[in-house]
Length: 256
Image (cartoon, rainbow, N blue to C red; front, side):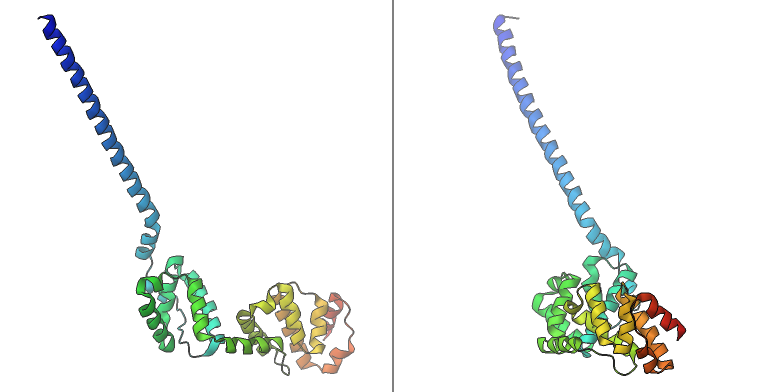
C-alpha cells in the first residue's frame, strides 16, 4: 500500500474517531436527560403520593361512621363553638387527613349552613373552597354566624358571669362555653381559675381560693363538691369557718 493510501486511511480514521466521540457524547447526554427526567418524575410522584393516597384511602363514609354532629347555623354562636369542638374530636377519631378536613366537615352542614356553603362554593369555585384549611374554614364561619354585635354581647356577659343560686353545674357549663367564645379573658390557666372563683358565691369562693388549685378542671371539681356540701348544710356554717390554708379548706369540707 502506498504512503498516500496510508495517509488517506489515517485521515479517515481521525474522522471516524471524531464522529464516534460526537455520537458518544450525544448518547451520554440523552441517557443523562432520561435519568434526570425519570428522577424528577419519581420525586414528583413521591411528593404527590401522600395527598393522592389520602384521597384514595380516606372517605366521607369513614368520617360519617364516627357520628359527626350536624351544623345548621341557626342556633347562635355558642352552638357553633360547641360544634367546632365536637367535630374536631370526630375528625381525629376518624383519622381524617389535614387536607380533607374541610371537605368532610362541611359534609354535615344542613339548613342555613348548607345554603351559605353552597354560596361560598359558587363564589370561590369548588376547588378553592375545599382547599381551605380547617382553621380558614372556622374563620369564615365566625364571620358569617357570629356577628361583631353578638360577640360583644357575649364578651360583656363573660365579664360579669356569676353563679345563680346554688346551680354550680349551670355556671360551670356556661363558663366553659364562654371560655371558647371569648378566649382572651382566659388566656392562661391562672386567669381562668381566678375568673371562675370570682363567679362563685363568696361562701364557696373562699374555700376554693384557699385550696390553691393548679388547673381549671380541678377548680371546677372542688367548687362542685363544696356546693354539694353547702346544699346539705346551712350557708352560715360555711361562712363561720375562717379559711387560711389549703388544709383547713379541705378539712372543713370533709367534716361537713
